[in-house]
Amino acid sequence: ETGVTQSPTHLIKTRGQQVTLRCSSQSGHNTVSWYQQALGQGPQFIFQYYREEENGRGNFPPRFSGLQFPNYSSELNVNALELDDSALYLCASSFGTGPEKLFFGSGTQLSVL
Amino acid sequence: AQKITQTQPGMFVQEKEAVTLDCTYDTSDPSYGLFWYKQPSSGEMIFLIYQGSYDQQNATEGRYSLNFQKARKSANLVISASQLGDSAMYFCAMREGWGSSASKIIFGSGTRLSIRP
Image 1 (tube, rainbow over the protein chains, first blue to last red):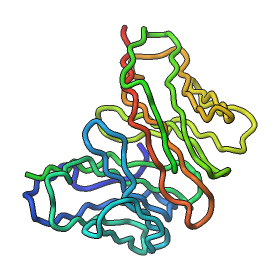
Image 2 (cartoon, rainbow over the protein chains, first blue to last red):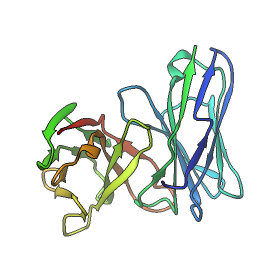
Image 3 (cartoon, chains in turn blue, cyan):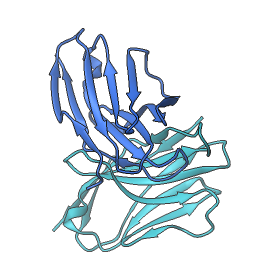
């Protein structure tokens, strides 16, 4: 077990709604990254937060936004949900932003109907 | 542009045999890190092994070793003496650069490994 916890584990929303996913990073880690994993695919990078600032973003629209708090926990917010947003959302934490290994949580499975 | 290619969508291997999972990558950055992750049905991504682009020796972690061939841009994962618990999806991944702007890891499409008793 990595110590990275995500909540909720499962979520069902309807198209157009908004959702907030939460992540508690491993103790001592100051960097959190979020990934979207569609069924049968590898995870896709959404964005990363380092010391409460976004310092990298993948090819996702602005309706995907995030926050990192002083205790380094993080939230992923998605507005105006679309059917294609249905996926497993993974949070990963690390110390620093170099090529260190990431520790992943078990993810939140989001279904958009 | 960064790219990771895993050409084996699925593999079946007999228990206790060794298995090699293929991975090729493409990058123009001389500084990068290569990773392998295991994803069981529970969904969690489990770190297996890491190889830095400047590392002279192939990385090893217990039964896992990474066959790093820089000139060929390949980073194959070798699992020795496979076990039933090794059945899972395996992802090859890469991270470019160093420093505060170094961020995303890109993943390949994965290989589903199934171990037969």
